[in-house]
Image 1 (cartoon, rainbow, N blue to C red):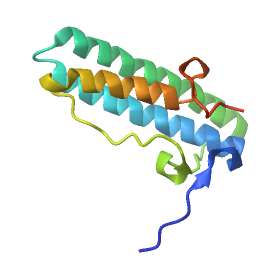
Image 2 (image 1 turned 180 degrees about the vertical axis):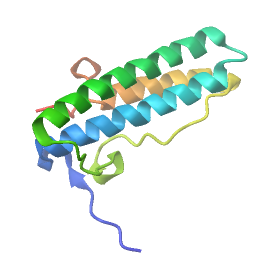
Image 3 (image 1 turned 60 degrees about the vertical axis):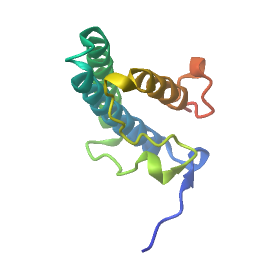
Length: 126
């Protein structure tokens, strides 16, 4: 099967970076919502934290989408994390009662690689 070469983050255009950011926020929000659903019964406070994180990701996505539409129009370029060399793979992990620490660790790793300068990311927005 043909597999396209992964691109370097520094080689992406501003439009591609913004598309990637929008899709990453959307995917992260879905992952956090899944964590919340899996933790709700046994760990309601932790579930509430992940619900709040999912809502925050949705706010980020909405703000980025508004910026994208203003700059580039309504059609988002189909680019995903797996298309970019060195960009963190966000394969969903199920957060079960025994996996609460794992879920929290996944959040930390996601923030480090999501372009947050305070989190030590090497991928900073232009």
